[in-house]
Structure formats: C-alpha cells, structure tokens
Image (cartoon, rainbow, N blue to C red; front, side):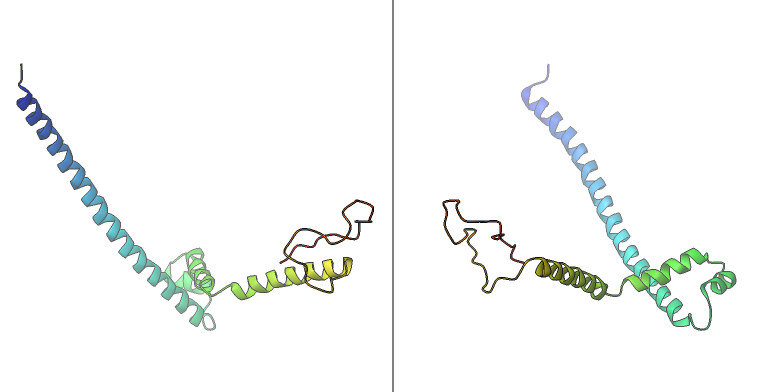
Amino acid sequence: MATTEEIERRVEQADAARSAKRAAAAKRVGELAQLRAEVAEKLGDIERELGDVLAESSDVISVDELAKFTDVPATDLTQWLNGRKTTRPKRKRSTASTATAKRDASQASSTSTPAPATQPSASPELAGPRNGAADTSTRIPTPVT
C-alpha cells in the first residue's frame, strides 16, 4: 500500500500533467483568437475600401459589369457597396422619424385635450375636493415627457 506522501506525490504529478495541457490549450486558443481579431479587422478595412471604390466608380461602371469583368459575384459586390452605405450615420433619418412620431402624437393629444395653463406638479395628487362629489372626468393626468 502507498504511503500518504506517495499518494500526494502521485496526485501532484497527475495534476501537473493536466495543468500543463490546460495551459497549452488556453495559450493556443488565446493566440488564435488574437489572430482572428487581427484578420477580421483587416477584412473589415478591405471591405470598406471595396465599398468606397464601388461607390466612386458607379458613374462609369455598373455592379453587373464589374461582376462580368472580375468574376466576382454581383451579390458580393452589392453587399460591399451597401455595407459602405450602412456605415453612414442613420440618426438623421431615425431621429426625424422619431421626432415626427412624437410631434404627431403630441399634436393628437393636444387637439383632444386642452393643454394646462401651468406645468403640472410632479405629485400625482389632483387639486380639488376629495369627497368624490366633484366631477373628476375632466381631471385626467397627462404623462410628463
């Protein structure tokens, strides 16, 4: 039967071999992930440049002609061209549509209910009698935006 010291030594040996394999695997995954990130960045740069060239040359040659001359599928060329266009800020369009929606909503609410003369307080309580005798149908709290 093995002594406790021998058992401890065997466990440490087994753990050392496993730890070395784990470290090697982690190191290789880290290296490959770093390489992938570098290649992906370079590919993104190339695709942006392709899109720029396609856009700049669109007045003298079409995507279909380029596909025919280069043997590059027109779908790929179109994707690069459109990818370039999506890098432009879309906030102007989305902000305008959001602003239009908000304006339309506020106009609709302002035409259906009169705007209060003063800004409503942050308190949810309504002024006036609380005994229930008053007509509260005209007291509709409006959300503060």
